[in-house]
Amino acid sequence: MNAPRGDGDRLAFFVTSHGFGHLNRAVAAINKVPAKIPVVIRSHPDLFPHWNERLTRPAELSAHVSDSGAINPPGDSTATDGPATLAAAARIHEEAMGRLDADARWLTDHGIAAILCDAPAMPLLAARHAGVPGACLVNFTWADIYGPYAKAAGRHALELVAAIRTAYRSATRVFRCEPALAMSWLPRQENVGIVANPARDRRRELRSLLGLGPREKLAYFYVGRYGQDGLDWERLERFGDRGIHFVGYHAAPVGPLKNLHVIPAHDWRGSDLIFATDALVAKAGYGTVSEAMAYGRPMIYPPRTGFSEFRALDRALRAWGGGIPVSSRDFSGFRLEQALDRAFATGPLRPPYPTDGADRVAGELAALCRPSAAVRASRRA
Image (cartoon, rainbow, N blue to C red):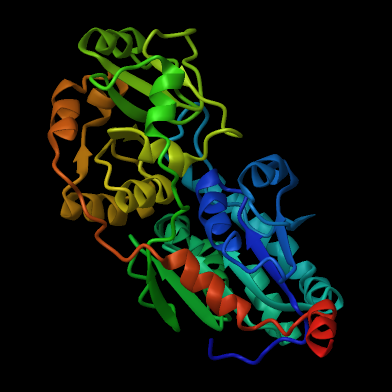
């Protein structure tokens, strides 16, 4: 990284509280950081249990909120409420500006050598004030997401987006992970390809656990946790008559379905579950798309309204050949017969981008850390 080395030996990761995709992506890089380097993760405390499920190395968890992401309308996890999103972003931004000096002191007082943000902007500004290298890991920025809503909202919203862009420009390095928005306004980008968690081959174990033989087809299933009441769950269950089963982390709100299997997240990482299935039926978010691409699993997905990131994901999925888009009507009604037939008939798929992004990010961050006192002492001995 083209930045001065920090005075500390610790890495700090600032991760948004908006959704699990960012957590899932950030943890892929965190788990690759050598165990001798102390790591502290700063996020909303509500995410602490999920960090503990996914971490494979020691890390300190520290409560900190510096962004608000996007706000979904009540009961609809596929759309974005523009005015509510801007209102929350303005409030959080003002709070973060008010504690900017305190956040910069925290970095110095805690011996932080460098930070990585996925994808808050304000910690990058605090890092610049503290003289600490600050990197961000992004396939979009909140400035890109908020921009279209700000144009409709007027001057104050446009000023907010400009301020957030200024904070992002404080980054000493931008790790751009694919599939990504253009972000042509953001300097110092380094394309690192896909950042995905490693997958273990647990296909036989999963089928044995579910009581399935080799002939049944198995699809990873995630439709969000909101707005599910209007879905045609009876139609989904009828796919069992065709030998098609679905597996995921959340039960149907109507009760158990004979072919929808719920797996505990603490036993099965998303990458392991995706690798063990034949296809995905899911919303298109970065974590799901990147791991589908990394492990060559075709993906059936609906459109997402008011979600700027979706354009890049949809374009990449179609170009890759493993993306199978369906209409919102067909997705909510689970009219997926043709899409599933197409997915199961798809031949071998290769990742469209390099898949070593987590290693590259972790390696560059680790290079900024001076050896800890314990390591220095062992070297002297």
